[in-house]
Each structure stands twice: as structure tokens, then as C-alpha cells.
Amino acid sequence: MPAFIDSHCHLADPAFDVDRDDAVARARSAGAVALVCIGESPAMAARARELAVRHAGFVWYTAGVHPHDAASFDPIGDLEGLRDEIAQGAIALGECGLDYHYDHSPRDQQRRAFAAQLALAAEYRLPVVVHSREAADDTAAMVREAGAAGVVGILHCFSGPAALADVGLAAGWYVSFSGIITFKKWADDALLRLPPADRLLVESDAPYLAPVPYRGKRNEPAYVSQTVAKLAEARGLSADRLGAVVSENAVRCFNLPVAT
Ligand code: NI
Image (cartoon, rainbow, N blue to C red; front, side, top):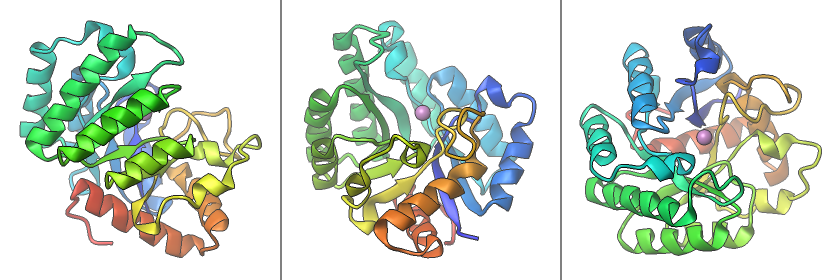
């Protein structure tokens, strides 16, 4: 059974209120050696922290403000909340970024909230988990600038374009693939071969984006093994080897005290 680290799951989401600890146990049984639970708001980060405390050594957590919520981003209160989570053990900023598909928040406010979190990542020398949808040009510009300031991050749930991956990789960033790459409509295996082996990550993005054959169901970290299998096939590696690679990468990227 291939090992893996789920670099991005939303286990604090209410979708897991009925079986959160069981989902963690199932992930472990499926080969997970660690889970990174995303706190996409200060409030969700506090819930993610509780889970990380309860599963110390297996679950870690992040703290950020999602682009959907950028309109209500408070540069004083929210940043104070994020600093507080970092002091309590958050291992990364995010998820943050730009979403011009939904445009739930005005774009200039999205950029402002994203920039503030990139600055925090630079200050604390922490990685940053980045969400980008239909915003590749602006994301690339901000990633390039952050990279120049020494920030390393993750292009999460990556599905293109390749030009954005190129900018991220040039800045020393990682590319994380989700269950999307198992969907029937996925037609870009070349993209799966683009990042060098030492920059590859996998994620569930649970409860969203369940991979085939669980598509349409609630997703959970255990299902990342399907994504590992698909990525391994596309890159001509065994699933065991690919799983070892993505685990080593996650340990390095997030600076996790985990043996792989
Ligand atoms: Ni997410």
C-alpha cells in the first residue's frame, strides 16, 4: 500500500462533524503518514487546531483567509488571528489566493488579502497554500514577487495552466494534484509530468472533489490513494515510489517532523 501525505484537506468542515476522527483513522489505514488540515478562516483554523491537537504527530493545520472571504478581510483583526494561530502551531498560511471564477469578493480586495498573507508568510518563513481559479496571470505575478521575497508555497488543486506551474516551479514552489486528475474529462497528463519529482504533492481537498470511483460522494483523505495511483501511472512510476516521493516532498515543504 503506497504511503502518502494529504497536503490539503478540510477536515474541520461541518461535513465531517459526524465522523471526523473516523476519517482520520481511515486515512491512516489507507496509507497516510500525515494530513494537513486547512484552516481557511481564523474560525476554521481554530477548529483545525483542535483536530491537530487531538491527533498530534499525524494531523497538522494551516491558517488563512480564503479569497471568497476577502471582502470581509480585516487587515488588523484577521492578521492578528493568523499570528495567533501561528504562535499556537499552524504550519502554513492559507489557503489564500485569487478566485476570479466565482468572484465572491471584489478582485482588488482578493489581491489585498492575498498580498497580506504572502507578507505574513515571508515574515514567519512559513509556506503558503495558494488557491487560484481563472486568475493565473495575477496569481503568477504575485507568486513571482513572493518567491523573490523568499516565500515558498504550494499551487493547490492544480489543473493548469502550465504557465502558472512554470512560474511557481521557478520560484521554488510545489504543485499539488487532487482527485480532478482521475476524472474522465481530465485530458492533460502532460501537466502531471511537468513538475520535477521533488516538487510534487497530492491532496484530497476533502470534502470536495472525490476521485473516481468515489466521484460525487463526500471526499475524504483516504481516497488520495486513487490520485497517487493516477499520478504514478502518468509519470511511469510505481505507486509505492510515487507515494514515497510525495511524502518526502510534503515533509520538506511543510517542515514536518515525520519520518518517511
Ligand atoms: Ni481547499
